[in-house]
Image 1 (cartoon, rainbow, N blue to C red):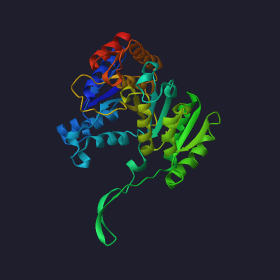
Image 2: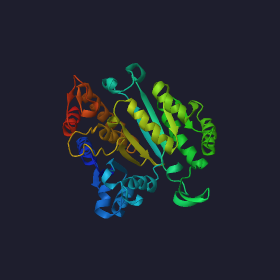
Image 3: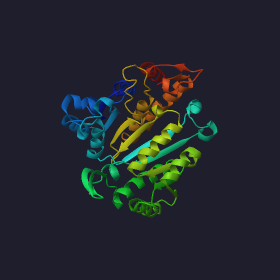
Image 4: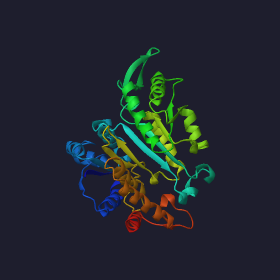
Length: 354
């Protein structure tokens, strides 16, 4: 198993160190090699996704990423911002399917801002299309245009999807639902956007290929409301790039902390990039207090989806549950009566539980 390790920026190196320790403890045949992505790559090479990293990522079976970004790069030219590296690797590797689970561990029910009875037992999978939509559509830009007789700055982006792009992400969602509770909710804005009318049409057509899976449709604004009002109605949600970006972050906070949630971004052959759902958290970088569990759980997703090693994935997930049951908490999930620990201490505890 050849794994490209990209620690990234901010807390990325700290949480990645713990994930790598867990991976090594499983005693699997693994080759790991580190490279630069994001702000650290800009500082070292001038590019957020340097050629050396591109070659390593393309040659690897899977990519394990920490986090990218930070305020020190916010004023860089757009092509030299850390996030461009993340978009670049997704596009180059064809990682069109983003899987983000939102699972509420029983021990963390009080960490959610919603009432425990609303979120207890929550287990949602959001499937987000990752390489199309308004994030990549052309034309795009900012230019001067004459409007009402005067020149003004004019910003524009283009939302578009092909039928084949929509159909392939829907099939990922339907296949995932078959392994869960056999329910798919497709999210769009068909009452306003023609692009998402096509999405709904293709979803309806694709749903006929899966008669054993219940398909429903929901407008994105209502979906955002329902995630807060009654999140347990959902099993698998599938949507486009922009809506998925927003809804998956919203769903993650139902669980109490985005620091608990892993993610996978897959190509057509299940080669994947695995990363925590949270960002680089520069305000706590270097303090040894970041929560490494989302990155550790991303390793479990990597073993499950790319390497088809379900037993190893379940070992990691069971170890995390044991640690939480013992009452160990990093600052983001701490509550009175539990034991506050740092990044390395949490990693030590997971290793002991393994």
